[in-house]
Amino acid sequence: MTKDKLSIVPQGKLTRACDVVTASLALGLYSPFILSAAIRSYFKSESLFKKEIALDALHRPVHQLLLRNSEHANIGLYLSVLRGQLSIIGLDRLPTDSRLVPNDISPENSKAAYPAGIFSLASNHRSIGLLGPSETLSLERQFQSLQGITYFKTLAKTALCSLLYKGKKLKSETSFYLFGLKIDNHSMSEAIDWLFDKPEQGCETAVFVNVNSVNLSHEQAELRHAINSANKVFADGSGVRMGARKLGIALKGNVNGTDMLPILCRQASSASKRLFLYGAAPGVAAKAADKLRKKYPGLRIVGVQHGFANTGNNDKLEQQTIDSINNSKADILLLGLGSPLQEQWLKRNRHKLKVDKALAVGGLFDYHSGNIPRAPLFLRELGFEWLWRLFQEPSKKFYRYVIGNPLYLLRLLRLKRQL
Image 1 (tube, rainbow, N blue to C red):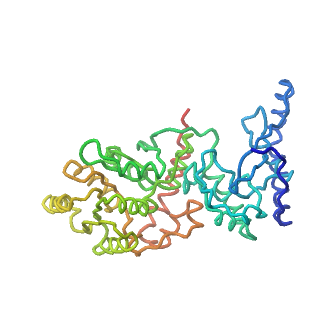
Image 2: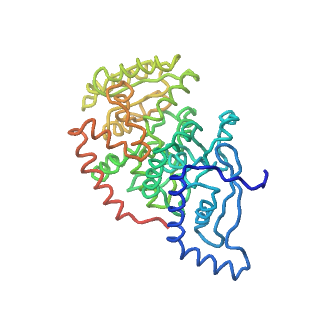
Image 3: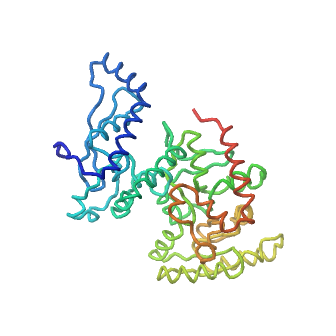
């Protein structure tokens, strides 16, 4: 890679002024760390800063300064901002194993007047789990995030995401316990791969854990046991991410059913895997199935059953549902009975099921039937999708979010960080 000095990329005057003020304030705030690093560097006869070259989303070299002899090496990036080599918010500085498609880059884009940033919309998405660690956003999305007033909106999102979801010295663990629930630390792609892997023995089950799961399991030991008995427990939502951060653990992704289902359907269609949808109010699962078949040609949904008839203690009706699932020859069961019913149903009946995988998906069918619209992207980018759910169903979701979320935050405050 060339080491020629990267030319300063032109910016709007207001944006540049914002960068200079923010970088100056940051350097002033971090001055004790800089002084400490300077003393160490002096006695080691080393320069205070070291130079490094990265690539941005346009595959341009980005010359950046990092602070030597300090745990806070990225402080030096703010000096790069003052020198005009970076912006506070800009194009993504690519992860080392990023999967950016080269065809994304056109000659006119390579000359675009957008600098690389310390932060970017893509880095925000990674911090909240909307993107995997090695993924980045399309150039079009990144360009849009830097235009006019949108730049300052992205800056505000960055500040909030840094406060809520980024942590120091986060370690990577394959699994961890959060309030007694064992959670598997997977990316979305790893979760999808598991769903399509051949089961080792019998039916393998998976559930999603979110703030509501934690609150319910705190009071219901039966639910906690049901969740922990699943083969896979996926981390769903910003609340679990905050809990993992408190434990010093970096989550690989936000593995939620709403984002998973389109990927699952595309892969099931190409792999000729058969799905069975069980749950939700009468007509909802059938409506979701119709919409999914139209959206994903070739998708084989071989059975549908609403969840209002067979969720009681009637063993005969429950067995009839199990027989319907087994007779359909489905490979994957999507179970949307809501928590705690769905987790307990899986624990009770997994040994009777002849499907390869069974996945508890909560209210997923309501989303994909069109009954409840998905939250706007800007709320998802902040991890506040729950606000949209509360707005959609205020009476039904009042206790879950208005009471449950503060209760969870109180529990987080008492949670000790793992050493």
